[in-house]
Length: 194
Image (cartoon, rainbow, N blue to C red):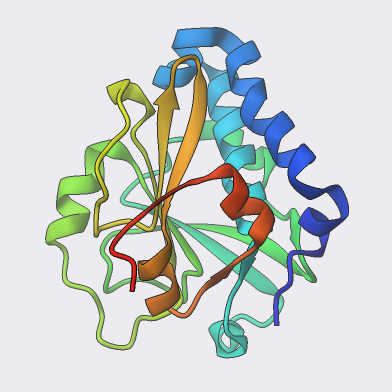
């Protein structure tokens, strides 16, 4: 089982520092995702979110030593992705892939959906055997807190000059994912409760 040991060592303070860095990293340009530095910060946010997730044991049968972060259709982080490639999440290394469709999920544990691919992702057929996949999208460019969206479990959004994130906790539980309390304390929780 993946426990996100690195996250628990640092606690929520570490994640807060990363999230707060976006404000310092370039203000509105960073929030809109225009700068290379903002891409580095967002890549770090995705890495640190992953460190607070517990996937079912069978999620790693196809790739036992890896956690797979898949970008849907293209990598919006550019060269900044190299700053997180190979980093440890628990006792596994982060592998980065690009997938063309949801059916081509290559054993993805996380799928990051760029904002320009969100409509296509919503329309794409979900594989019947898919479970325990953490989906994330970045809507910071919109400048508003988005409504709950069934397409992704975590949404990055702009909160004034900072990046916040919302989690559809009931959907994450239905997907078989457990999210650490440190992560939940920092998130805006959405989704139907019950």
